[in-house]
Image (cartoon, rainbow over all chains, first blue to last red; front, side, top):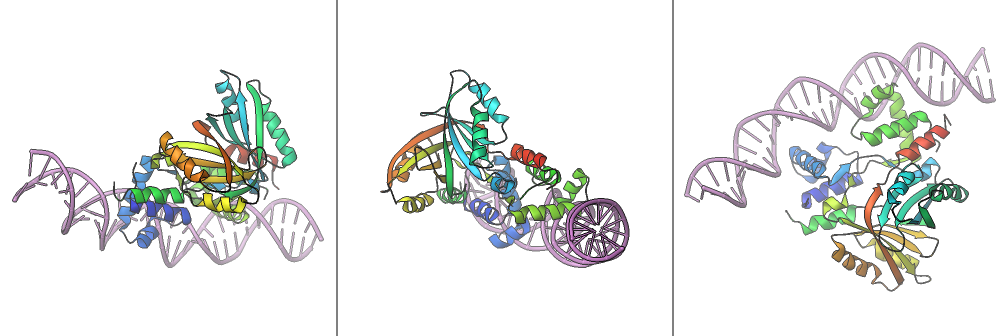
Length: 159
Length: 159
DNA sequence: CTGAGCGCTGGGCAATCTGTTCAGCGCCAC
DNA sequence: GTGGCGCTGAACAGATTGCCCAGCGCTCAG
């Protein structure tokens, strides 16, 4: 659960050059290959590293428009709404939250016009009372993890 | 830019079993290795596949709390705010949006109490007028791409 | 103090995969 | 009909992987 400095360097290195391989990593980090291998195994079984899935760019797939929708759900319909949204491919992510809304979801669409279709499909379900949508204009900070990893690694100079 | 059915199968396969390797993929898909290799190269240079960075779980790093904050920015301070937020490790993602707020960011924290510290740091900056935060209770649909890839692949039975 | 457990090192092994190249073949457009 | 393009099936050397081992230093419990 806690990661030390070496773990941090492994993750950062991996994030910067994913195709790098254990051998090359051990060379760069100046440790034995077995060590890197053991650390990686541990990080993966710990769940710190979930996997190495391909990062697909929706824009390159023809879905350049991203939006966030805040949904208000009718009492007791949460499970149904979740199931409904899970069937919509354009829903990339869904969270239930505290606050003014009840759920927050990330959507993509082929165009602003197409976004209307997606939203209609999302909210065209009985349990959803209201939806408020914010279209993303610029992704100022793309999803990142390195700074957090570095911070976590520093705090834990060996668990 | 457009992907066909084979591209879709490659991506889906890769998403399900990231460690699979080109050779094994070609076996499973029933095509020649060179074909898979060429497709992969194309997908990557197209930008459809950005990379294969490790997926790190913030919760396993000691940051189990996720929240979304909607920020209102003082006119003309956008760039400064972006730069400020980029320096906060707990800010995993930042978008500028249309709608009631001006920016939407994803935050993580070590606890609900720690979230207060993070928010203070985020909003403790001159250009930010107001922040409204929603704490994530459940990640009903984790960030996913497969359904979208499948849809994109079906629409394009060979570009 | 002593012994056990643990992590890292440095080495070695066979098996596998990668990057790359080649010729052949079907298909489409010009 | 000819060229371009994509896929196949094969080959090659080079590199990497998964796995195992003995040795060594450190920490902790007895």
